[in-house]
Image 1 (cartoon, rainbow, N blue to C red):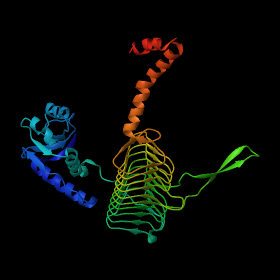
Image 2: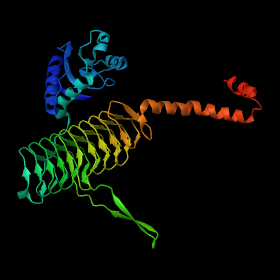
Image 3: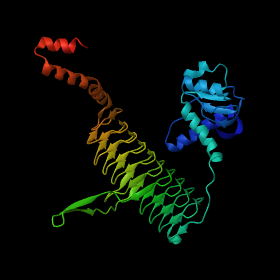
Image 4: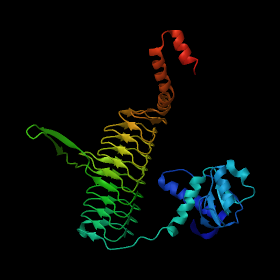
Length: 378
């Protein structure tokens, strides 16, 4: 449960809608959905999940089960979709078409009080005279800042962050503790790079040289001299890695959201508003179109192309090219999800049946005996 300064439900709804509209304007468009407030004078003093709901708490519920849990816990109010409004039984509520979206805006209002303030410290500048540091930049302890580094207004550089020479950080961007940004890389405005992420490390590439004399296969390293260019409003999760290009740049376009433990190989290009879930790996030179969803543990082989709006489901192995369009793909190698599910059903349901058929076929003395042994036994 997250404590909240006591506020009426109607005031909270108004402030959340305003915050959502302001944030969406910065992100490029959209409007907050309209909210119907029931019991607007109800005081809210905490935010909680439906399971932990109690007196004074506001939670959200998108199914009858969660609404029942909120009621059982005595939640002060619930954020629900219109389909659940008839089940409220007079309980105070915010009725909105997108409960999760409105609740996210409410959490955003509570964030400043809930998150401990950044500990401030003195960064180490290799050569301060060559750097351009904007207004209101906050540095945590033990930061390293190389030469010719540019940091925009209001950026936050957390403890133990390492910024190499010629790095650019956009205004309002937050670098969480122990982020590493290697030489020449650019991070856009209002980005969040989470703890332990590494931007601009060498790509993985070697030329193979056989050595018959020694019986070895020598792996001769390809130095990577391109950069990583990250657009505005990008989020990169903890312990993720985005490798620099060989000669051209690795590019992550505006609005991309990456989970933790993601690997983006050298010379990849991720289009706008792509979602990348945990443990996804994109091989070098992969091209991902706008608004693509790459779900957990899927992998893109070297040079794969995923067209705009495609959904690549968890553990899918992508090889070659996926066309654009809002189609779900799965399996290894990748294929449309409906086709993959039919294939899986055939393997689990039909293959054992056919094995039994061929076993009966081999030992049956006649077709009539086969029919009796196989078909009549089903």
